[in-house]
Length: 616
Image 1 (cartoon, rainbow, N blue to C red):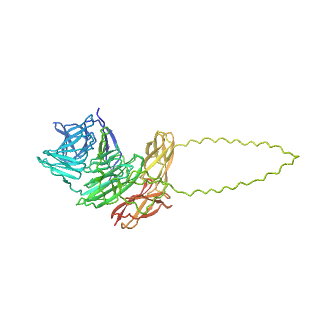
Image 2 (cartoon, rainbow, N blue to C red):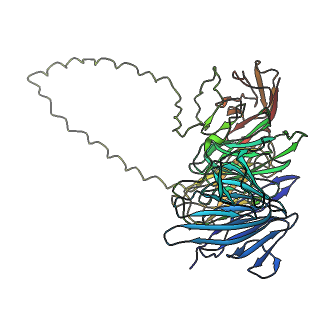
Image 3 (tube, one colour):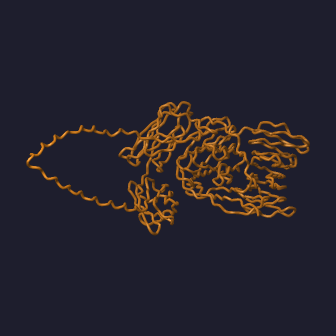
């Protein structure tokens, strides 16, 4: 019986002109250990079985050794192999599967032929000496053991192999050259490979960064993904030339060199223990100059899925420009196709690119293993009853903030007062001994009446997400309804009777009013309240050496706010005044470059629209 790869379909949604991705849908699909799965990303592709003619391929079609795959002039496809390696097939490209086997010893052999066109191979690191991934062309043979590389084959058969990470051995006419990361070689028909030389410098680099606890996947306009999908979790590198850190690296990075203009969707799924996350999108041009930097913040319990998008334009020299990340939205599906082989052999050493390949961006963006934002010299942690997760460059326990309180003074105990003994009774008149007064027996305290289930709301803007929690419920399905009876969401409590679920606050919620909502499992019910607010912030900034001021209005009175920006190593926090307003400021730390920076504010899960600060 063959293994059963899990196929994760993430389908794009378009709402109000903004690409909104939503949750992964898992479907099962049979495949034997020697089979491969073909994914059609766009356009069309054809498949020929052995010596047979070509016929139209279907998305998810299983391939076998001897099959030929041909993409149309506008077609994009991906073949996923049994070990998780992939080959992305560009338009007008033809490949043939020569062999794809997994021996009982664990050795994996994948042999392909590319007749014409362009491919991007992302190969899992092969830990056995008798395993191999081999791609042949009319002019050469490329052999790898865990790398990412591009292969271009012209109609003449001339072949160019460009290595993104790892090394590729290219052989032709009895000569083998080793092509390291950032290098290329060209092989003409009936000729030996040219000496490896530097690949052309990227005209731009688009970087997405994310601090845990969450996974990030980035999807380009063709539906190709790069990042980490939750199943496994598994690192995916479908976008040609992309670099992605493996699961567990904090911060998570996705680099896209030579990024094309278009809309990039991002999907963020929180993982245990849940909490806040910060995501960034930055770009540099070919000279390494910062083009833009934007950030977005959110948070939720494990398994909450959020989506955002970034639309970029490219100038004549390839430099990118953008107007910011879209506001986070609750998602159900995302625009990509990923095939995960859960029963395939897992390499002992991950195939993730070396972190040294993630060049330091000249700003306060994320870098591999560290965040280079220096903390403001005047910043200090403010104790808060509502702790705010602070991104950390390394995995470390977050210290618990303790609110210091003055001890309640205890008055000194007064010294005992001696009561003089009464005079002795006259000797001739003895007093009878008094009978002891019986003490009343205290009534037994009745046991406390068991409390029923509870549900807790909070603050939120109309149309936004709010995490609602419940305690003391049965394991029956709980329906949460608005005050007019409209059902909003359903959830099942865990074995302890608790649940956390994200719901969308109705758009018609009255701002400034507390709205009653109910939860019911069909037998028991409870009520909670959601107060609607539409908070705003305004930002004033001038130069990199001047103070940046942030003024907020429309916030819940007496609540704790948090200000976040990529200029800040830790969020600024404070207390909202009784009229729902606040005002704060900070000075950008030394080394901040000129450019656009996003600033956001939140109270719990209540967010204001981020504002852009342009530093001169």
